[in-house]
Image: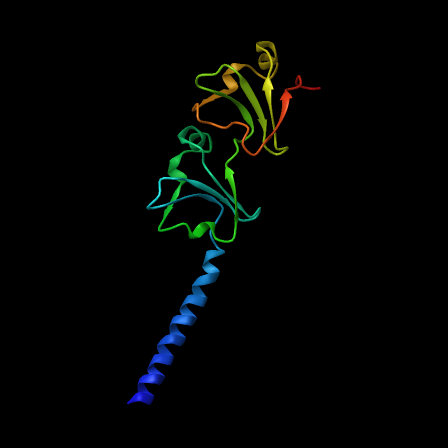
Length: 156
């Protein structure tokens, strides 16, 4: 009886090890995108190609990225496994100002820079104030960007 029980235990243990080792590669298959664990209100962006994840700052940033309907709700934070946490997500390319501030920032995401638009005339040269998105006061518009000071005039 002991030998049978030992063999059965080894078979069960072998099955568990095989199933858990089969499950591990699935962690690497999380597609890029927005995720939230079901027990946590924070939304994260995952970029497996660039090996990072970041925290979406607030609802206005999520709306700029296309809205909450694209957030995948998952059981836990396994989607973060194997990637580096870089902090707050940066804003995409565009013009932004905080609700209680008149200062407008320009963000160039591919270059990783941000600047402030120094006059209404400069903003007009960039296409006008209709291009400016107003974001929550808690927004860190410079997150993940290098502040280069004043923007340059377009075409220069």
